[in-house]
Length: 107
Image 1: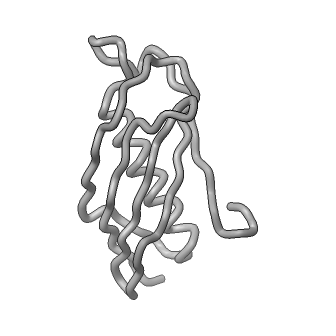
Image 2 (image 1 turned 90 degrees about the vertical axis):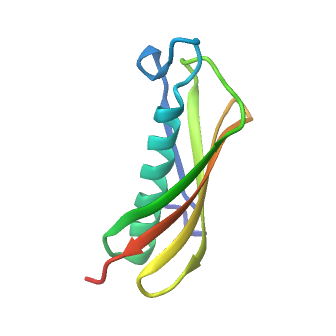
């Protein structure tokens, strides 16, 4: 995590992340979004978290073999629940977005 509280996540996609249409599989992008959003929230609140709900939207396709980068924003946080937004992009192109509701467990 950077000193300003932001964090960047990423992974290098390969053929395993593709679908039969020759583009990145939506499941790989949703898994990435869910993982980075939960990880970022847990690192900020210093408590375990769990996904309650995740709403994803696919914006564009891209062939496997590119670096996928993600960003996270905590929109609102209460004591035991948080609302988090995430974006995944590659080569400057927005691929998918997600909004998640997460349970925050106290230590």
